[in-house]
Image (cartoon, rainbow over all chains, first blue to last red; front, side):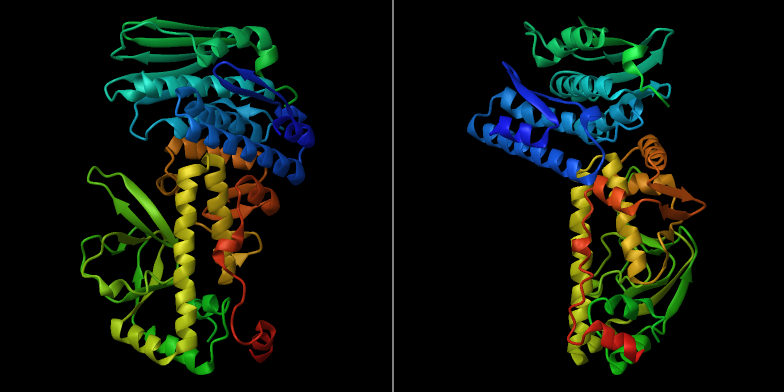
Length: 220
Length: 250
């Protein structure tokens, strides 16, 4: 059913089933303007959401519970108009709005940047994974902790730092999940960039770098 | 007589008889003016008569002890600030003028008399109460599910439709004398996020919000991105007489 839906809308490339959940690849630039295409995309997203809801009802594993969040993050980027690129600050704020409580302490700072559709797609999902992890174990789960999300442009790349501090870190072995996989591999393989996550006793710090040619929306 | 915005609003639902219109007008004699930002009635106050906004723009809000405020409704001319409020002893929320406003106060006895004597008018007032509740439901969906751009787009579409239903629009423009802080307190967004989102709507050439005037530049596109469907405003005429008959008569 999934594949036929995908073909029908001609927007979504086939799904890849990973160990950790579903990963759908939506490319906004393939998405021609117009209400009809928008409606088709919404119907596909509705189908995915209903599958996620069904899975979560069947088994309450963390993976199935997080699927809905991931679909939400993918849709936020997919449904945003990418004609003029996607504003990075809005992407960050939207993700925090969806994940964080209004009283959470966070700081968001960076210059005006319009991301390309492709970069926004990966960045949106990465921000979602970081926020969801933070909400579960990190700064967004603890009132005394701080979170700062900052980015800057250098001559050849965009660097975004997600820095958590004053976090009481949980003991135990950390297993690499979908989020760390995404940050540490896909920025390199898909955007010629890099992503790293460093855990210290004070909190987690994630640094993502993307070359400007890939990161920025062109022709504006 | 059609200048009364409540009569105008109810005419979206039914045709009021001459007598019913007269009865509404007679209940609206006690008119007071309020400055922008002044409370019309505050949380904890004894409830009084039913407030009807005649001119201006107002909001219903709740305030937390530490000063955070949530705006839970907007009132455009013709809106009643709760038809049945006098049943309660004290206000559990506040109502404030956002711009200089004229408010009629309908005494509880007058409201009860209207409801007792005019069944058609009563149905129309019930309709307007149901629409208010439908708007409140839509606002919960707004803060619960829509993202920032969708929330703001939805609010602006709704306000344009509501102003239009009482003839207070100028094409796709309407007076909207609110600040970005008001918008933030309405949509549950930070001021930074509101600012960002306004910029994005402007950049996509969907709206302009300048000098207290909202202009929707592309209504179909704005409705589309914000999942706006005006059905919940129930503007469909439901009365016993066809609407064009009324138009001919007036």
